[in-house]
Length: 163
Image (cartoon, rainbow, N blue to C red; front, side):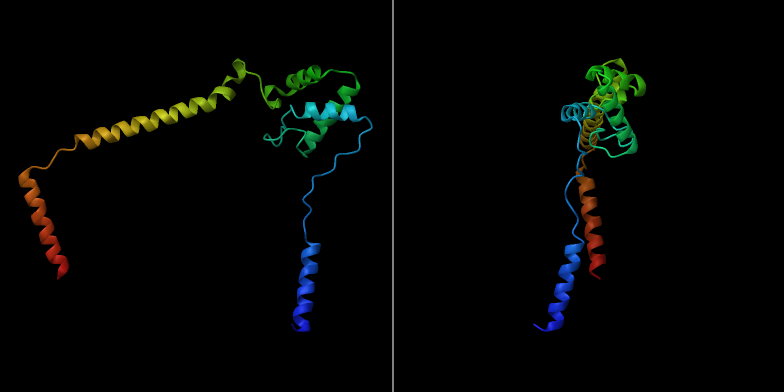
């Protein structure tokens, strides 16, 4: 190999090495009290990030999620129990803040909505298939004269296409 190719290869390898993204997660801050941090993470895993909405506040880096985690931490330091903290968050933000909302009258749509949509979709599909089958069965059969006429028309069309 020529020295130009080797130098180009080395430069390319250096660029690729320097541009290599890190695939690690962000390190959690070192906790003064590891037991407290475990409780914070356990409660945070039960609360929905109100910004992201598809993550828990334990998984989210949104500023609101960080604030909520800090609130949880402070309430635990004040001696509140897990259920008291969850009740406080529900009172402040509603049942939506819970990652697994309870089954009650105000959340019945959250729980049964997907099943209802599936049932409606299956009903519409079944109804259309039945109508299509009935329409296909209702098509009248051609009589012998109509068959002869169609054959003559097709034969005439084939003759004109060959010319």
